[in-house]
Amino acid sequence: RYVSIASLSVVSSFMVLWIVFGQLGMLSLPAALLPDSYVLAVIFSALAFWRHRSNLVRLKNGTENKFGQKKKE
Image 1 (tube, rainbow, N blue to C red):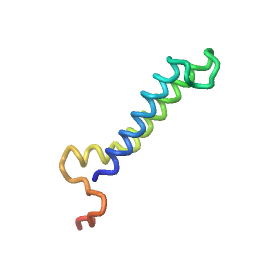
Image 2: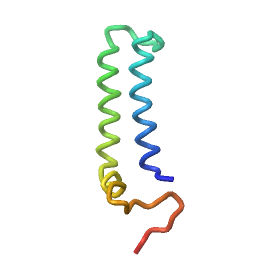
Image 3: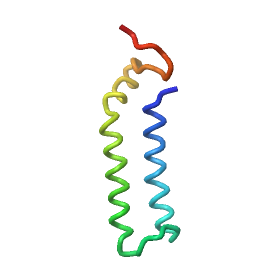
Image 4: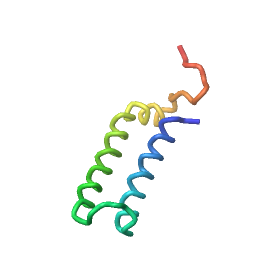
């Protein structure tokens, strides 16, 4: 029920699948553009982790709110 974990899982899966599909030739991209697209996928994933860094700290400390749970005051 932690939304940040789900978001980071999705973005990580996107990055891995983009690279796998690119290596298998399943993307409609010229081979010369594949390395650039891999870099963009990694940057996109890194930005998501950067954006969720405070949530990760709260998860580590056990203070992150669950989805549907009211915020503690």
